[in-house]
Amino acid sequence: MTIAKAQAAPAAHKSATAAHPSLRALERPVNLMGTNAPAFGSDVIADTLRALEIPFIALNPGASYRGLHDSIVNFLGNETPQMLLCLHEESAVAVAHGYAKVTGKPMAAAVHSNVGLFHATMAIFNAWCDRQPVIVLGATGPVDAVKRRPWIDWIHTARDQGAIVRNYTKWDDQPASPAAAREALLRAAWIASPAPRGPVYVNLAAELQEAKLPEPLAPIQAARFMPPASPTASAELIENAAAILKAAKHPVMLMGRVSRSVEAWNERVALAETLNAKVISDLKIGCGFPTDHPLHAGAPASNAMVPEAIAAIKAADVILALDWVDLGGALRNALGQEGPRAKIISISADFHVHNGWSMDYEILPPVDLMLPTTPDAAVPLLLHALGAGKPRTAAVVKPRVEKYEPSSGPVRVDDLTRSLKAAVGERDVTLTHLPLSWNGASWAFRHPLDYIGSEGGGGVGGGPGISVGAALALKDSGRLPIAICGDGDFCMGVTALWTAVHYRIPLLVVVCNNRSFFNDELHQERVARIRNRPPENRWIGQRISDPEIDCAGLAAAQGAVGFEPVTRTADLVPTFEKAIAAVEAGQVAVVDVRVEPGYSAVATAAMLRGTEK
Image (cartoon, rainbow, N blue to C red; front, top):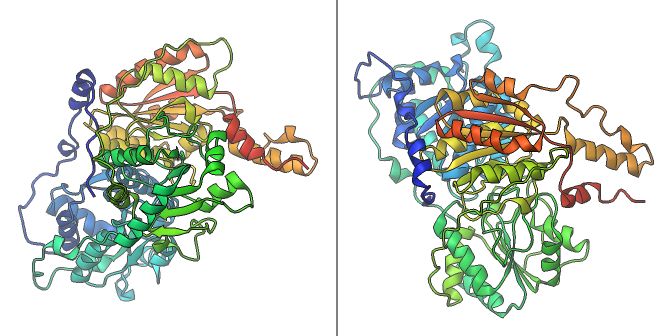
């Protein structure tokens, strides 16, 4: 897959970014022996990672893979891959996940034995639900019991360690020799990358890593073992879909999982304009279409549909779903239990990874025509079949700088958004994470890297680590990475910021701090209303107060620049301007904004739907 470059940033902003120190200059090993041939099993593993051009390996160190650790440092010189030290295995996998969300390419994460894998499971599940490629390397104590150290090696050795994550990875293996380990890594990278993409797990036994090679392995060309394997749709299916679309009077496009490619973005815009189709987006997924385009039906939302989107689906005679997450659920949200009258065309290869453990395949949708491929592959074929001209290059539309007039009332999420937009000005921004309280109408997306989507699996705590990985991928691109995290998400994943600070990865984190696990407050209110009980008690066991958490202090503890809580709207813009200046100087900045609890009207209505008796 070709990953498009981000559009050029204004020179003034790019020069500041270009001054950031290179990661390659950090943590340079000394007194290397200069050996070229692998001498140990772990050297073969490290050499294979380099052959696969894995740029980084995020890790929390552990004795179970000390052999591989040595090989990356002293055999490879800590380069391709370069190690990124993390303070928690969950952060290590989240960093790799965020990197993949921007680039579409896998990087590696290493986790210590079974205990490190237990820590990493939520982040692996997030990557699985988000269909992102991550190569997770684990390890185990000696398989041969006589080689185990007393106690520690025994409790860190499992009979079938891959079973911990097998239900939410595309593939796992525990090779028994260096040659098998090389093959396992090649297969892992090959399986992780084609759609539907996902994490893979390779468990490396300690004695495999640490044993000397009895003889050199024959060299291989990695590329020959990774043939292209993208799912395709037949010419007949493309022609059938084009005929249905050509006859449509009120087509609708559901914009689901798509790449960050600018070329593919322009092709989707061309298809919508050729069909005069209404387009619907979802904030669970990275942006795939300009949200202020005249054909976009209302604002993008998450877990709910805006009235304009519902009206478009009700009026549709053909619905084209581009790998939409939960197609059946979207139809039910808009139409209730009544089946759609519209013909449904679904472009997706997602069914290839559905299994009986995870229900992330969602409601079984009615589909009249299935194109078992990816939107990036199908859309240009549909354009050709429809006789459309070559997609035009979308004009670069700079964000409209709006003057923010602060109010004297309490700070609300929309105040945070409008003031942040004012402070950002005309900079190219990538939103790496958004809170559930986000109003999709408040920030237009005009480029595939304007927003990269949620954490995928709904795992609270993923936002900071994913944002660090995304910022790593965006480093020196001219784009300003901004993560807007809820306070619960931030507090669970805050130590991921240490990695960003340590490796000089600039990032702005805004804590949308309502001092509550507010999503659950609404759930408790719903239950209370259904049961005829007092909803005013919904806050108990939910509020994060008495004491309120010092998010700036948590940020400063990781080495970031922490800004004291913002409680007045008048202080938002000047604080954001200082924070952005710090990020453009190469730092990690965290701004704690104390917002009033509350969601957008659409999200709140969806949460409370069904409470009336």
